[in-house]
Image (cartoon, rainbow, N blue to C red; front, side):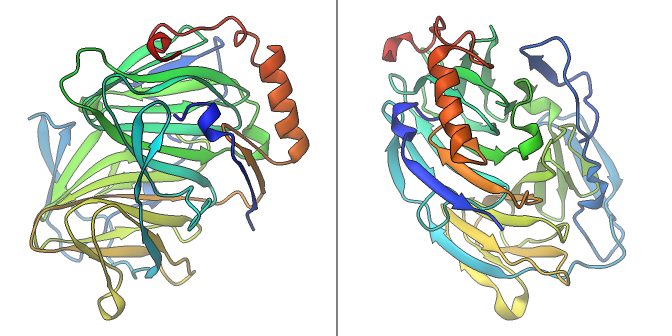
Length: 369
């Protein structure tokens, strides 16, 4: 996401996989690509009693009951380290975003570079722009969004759909609302940094329709398992950077105890409703559109969240930090300044991964070019 010109603001900082089912559309600029796997079975939601959970494919009626136990022990909850409100701002060409990670309060949170909650009306959007060195994860909450890139890939994301794009050595693409839509395109886009050894891999995508993303409901809590595991159910998504990404919907008064691997940095972004986060003796009240950074401690292996008097929604995201230098200039994220200079040279000269950039003009981005 983000128009190229709007992201050319220098931000420099230093920081300290499961196999694919046939339901995932995998697209790459080359015929084959190495796959890295993440066994997500260590990431679970825990309950103290043996009851059943209801598992559905997407939001359909194709459901079954499973044993809801995933651990004999309750998790020991992390606490809230910090929180701040994501204030709406302009971005791209006429779009509006609430920026979570990527603001002055939290420039990045290894391995995460940015999280935006976006709303894009017809006539606005993100015309042709490049990326290198990281992944973008687009998850639609409502409406529809089109995507087109210089590899010849074009597709549409609708409510509940997911696109996990590895930009790697380079991609140029456009992201725009679907013409004729009767509502803005509303969703989340997460930027995940790639390790130095992966920054120049060939670009590729995983795309899942909402019906192919597991939905699990137990005790008034529904988990949409975008990546990782919740309530004993795994996402089909594989991740290069060891990551989990869970969308929770909670009924009033419900409680969640979600396991988080001890080696991961983690945070919540609240979408609607009021929740309290953390252990009972130090829980913190959180309103919508807040970023909630969690503590990290070898003795703490999860998080407790309680819903208030109304339904609540949030995403819980975590990942293993790379611990490598971060050099970011707009849409290019590398490890050293010289690599940023090389990325600009490659993009402008149409070389080293950007060979198609000089002649590419997307169809969907033309109205704003």
